[in-house]
Image (cartoon, rainbow, N blue to C red; front, top):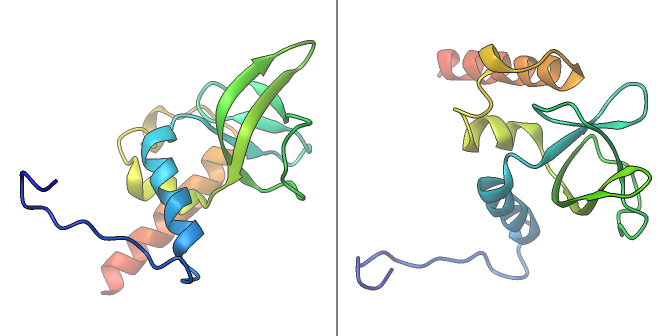
Length: 127
């Protein structure tokens, strides 16, 4: 970054945005490794529709609607491990090509993402 004279910036550790910015950075790199909590109560990986569960070693104390995961673990069940809670609008903003709704399999996640895309388009039109 110094070679290209790009200024490095960081969020202050005490800022309320500190951890959110870390999660946003993770979405930029791991946007293909996302699962959505379906109405039936199980998680479904986005795009390939694999039914998965949060690994028992997960330290999340709740079941977030959207999670980003680092590992897909196959035992007698499909688990996702090293997970974090994310916001779906981050996916649409940071990986627009991957989250293009025209080549997305039908599922609850697609319907929710379509609502988010419409909401974002309405905001842009009103500005």
